[in-house]
Image 1: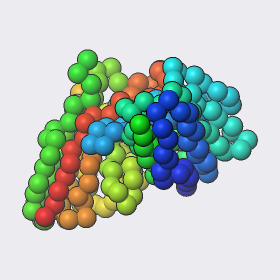
Image 2 (image 1 turned 90 degrees about the vertical axis):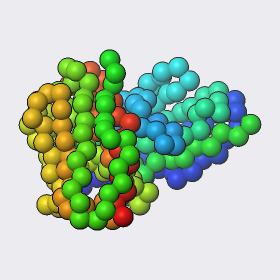
Image 3 (image 1 turned 180 degrees about the horizontal axis):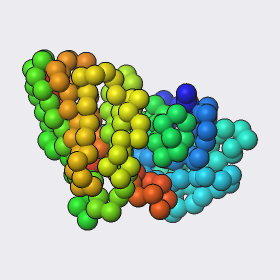
Image 4 (image 1 turned 30 degrees about the horizontal axis):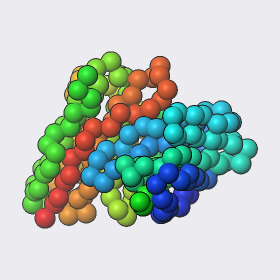
Length: 112
Length: 114
């Protein structure tokens, strides 16, 4: 099966940088994704890493180390609207290469 | 594109009743997923389809749950009979196999079984 671990909560101030870590165990790995979900909303896709290294998309970056079964999401220049839950998710495992298994989510609270 | 469309947005039903959730994926997407989200269990994959064919239904909790995709633009998730423990937000998502593997989620159906 698969398991993912990420911190349950993170607090940071506006303008700061925050890193949300994710470690995973899976049989069969095709990539690590990150999703954002605001309260009452739907998850929205942020990034995907299939290979080791850093992917940058604006203020958000995502990193993957397959040898360490580890990744992180880096949010820079935090804004109040970044307050949300962030989920890491792995592709692969028993559900097949297309299926995503999600972590339990990290609730980010951005304070003024 | 209007995105993934789910209906209804909210459903309140009595225990034992049949519930049908509906989903219209993004046109051209060849994968469709049903997820359930609860505080206790997080986001769980229930079933997914590729080109209207069910690929993996191992996440379907029990025989009370069934899902169909009669064509590329419509899918249903049915619960019969419903139980209070089925109360959750049910999300449908779709994706296209030849892109960056991101899912587009619908707004979800909040189901409450009383």
